[in-house]
Amino acid sequence: MPELLVICPITDVMRARLGQAFSFEERAQLSDEDAWLKAHGADVRFVLTDGALGISADLLGRLPNVEILSSYGVGYDGVDVAACTARNIPVCHTPGVLNEEVATTAMMLYLACWRNFEAEVAHARSSAWESGPLPHARTADGRTVGILGLGRIGKTIAAKLAPWRPRILYHGRRKQDVAFTYFDNLTDMAAACDTLICVAPGDASTRHLINAEVIEAIGPLGFLVNVGRGSTVDEAALIAALKSGKIAGAGLDVFEDEPRIPADLRALPNVVLTPHIGSATVETRRAMGDLAIDNLVAWKEGRPLPTPIPESLPLL
Ligand code: A2R
Image 1 (cartoon, rainbow, N blue to C red):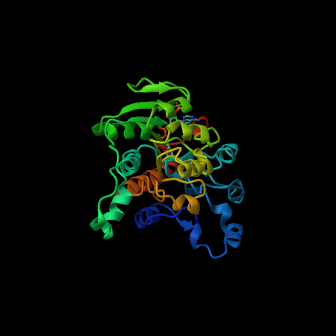
Image 2: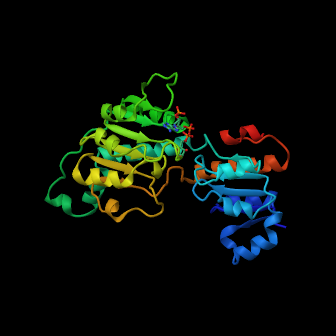
Image 3: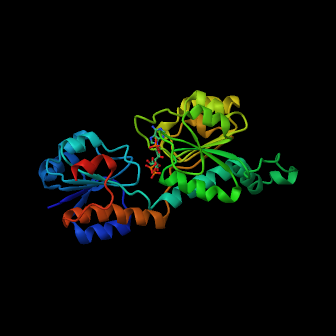
């Protein structure tokens, strides 16, 4: 009897650990999902998914006895939290264990933007250097960096930036007890910084928060780095600003319609693009997988959940 349905891709390490604790089925392995759900949907008590795939209200409706949903990742924008809450199903995620990795990804993009890294690498790989150097890049040192979302990862980015001696600004819905400069208005912060780093969650409150006005405020000498969620940036407005030189460039790990990236964006010379690899290292994915499974095992054994999402706390 499959008691656990795995919706997201998992690693072999996760598969081996799940096998010791649960009888489970992976959605990707189902040859006839409809038939499987009819036969086994009522046996499923646990669900493992990730922040992008989440779970739809429709699929949840076909699993009438689900007790707990664990999401492999910190963001859970793909999970229909309201549908889970309505059925008293707590949702867990994996905060904290990926802070350093996502902050490293932000640093890679930050440095790649300022030092024109992609073009320089291409210049070295081709014989173009024999005809002369590229124009000089601009320094990454001593910049004014505005962080949208000074949470767990945002604070880690600020710490990792320290050797480059930045002045740090931040915007969120509340002022925090930190040594950085708070802006209650995002456009004002964008105008005051020369790199805007986005690491806010993707939800209704952040959708297209980085719009044409904010992007233009960053200015023709500034960069946008996004390691949060693609939905936070108005991608069409960003592409227009990148084309017209209203912003110098962008380093993007997340996109509005992943895994599709608009051809227009891919063709631009002033962007550095990575395929949502923020937390994607062997070590960090292992830690995330362990925490996602720890939550399921804790529930099965009747122990407190290690990392429920804030919205689920009233259910516990
Ligand atoms: O608004 P605040 O003061 O609660 O700050 C949170 C900020 N944030 C927002 N800022 C402006 N406008 C909003 N509508 C808004 N909603 C949230 O984002 C907080 O400083 C930050 C989120 O921090 P944490 O909850 O600690 O999340 P963590 O672990 O840093 O991950 C952030 C996101 C994930 O949700 C994934 O989308 C991505 O990074 O991996």
